Image (tube, rainbow, N blue to C red; front, side, top):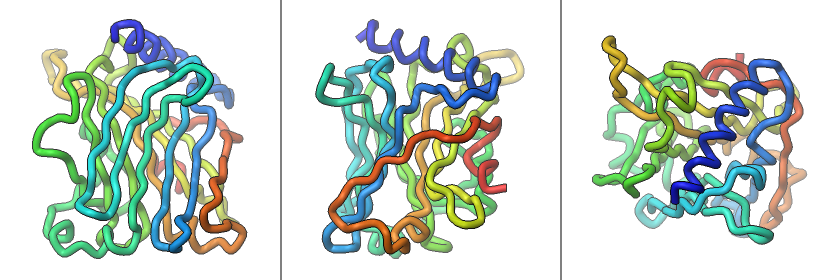
Length: 239
């Protein structure tokens, strides 16, 4: 486990360095997108490069709508992957979720920057001692769904506190990405003590993505990084 954690920390530092220099190299290999055969579900995930190796494994079901997940690296067969597979219509129309006070913040408290809040859903207890998973549901406008992971190893020694670096994928005609990814740093109090760890989030405008006629249901599509990283939460990519 220590080997896996160390690998992720080192690559997170590389991502910060490369991102600040404006290169397209990153820890992210691509993002996946697939519409279900029934035209009601969407599977979206961020796939890491093979240099990012971790045995973290977990999932968090959202009732019977599907789940968010993190899948561990397996040499030659499976890269590290974080994402969700959900019934988009039902999960965004759930009455109980609509009663939850929405948030405009990432799991560590940094601004998400979408322009309006999303409902954050988490398990009663952390998924694991080394990480936790969070789901994000857009009950206001029925556009965005997301999955986030907070990593216990991600402190201010591995990534600058209070910073986020984001990248978008598959923009529309106006240049607004359909899928957003961010790696976000930890948050410290005034004395420098750790309040919350950092992690990774992937958000998808499923309304935008699923409205495109070129995507065949049941087929998985891959989108690779083409533009530079930008400093700030995922919403900075929509500005």
